Image (cartoon, rainbow, N blue to C red; front, side, top):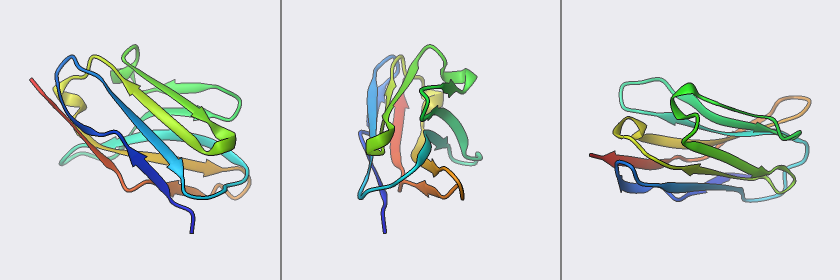
Length: 117
């Protein structure tokens, strides 16, 4: 079974940067969108950034201007460059993928990002 594997989380001081990466462990056809979501303790999972196979992207208001998503949809890889990190960005970050047609979805196992002031 194909899985999404994330890397790049860690501990960083406020104002610092981290880059998250995500890759599928096998071949996935007809990828429609890839994205990053996050979940902080006691909170619901929220969308951070998402990119479609036509290049469109969208961001949560809280990260606009600080985070940038990029992806090679054909290779099922995605990255999230996070700059000017804030303590409120602390969360587990999950990679997400959805296919055309049936809309099959995959989630990564999550990677912890902790920002201290």
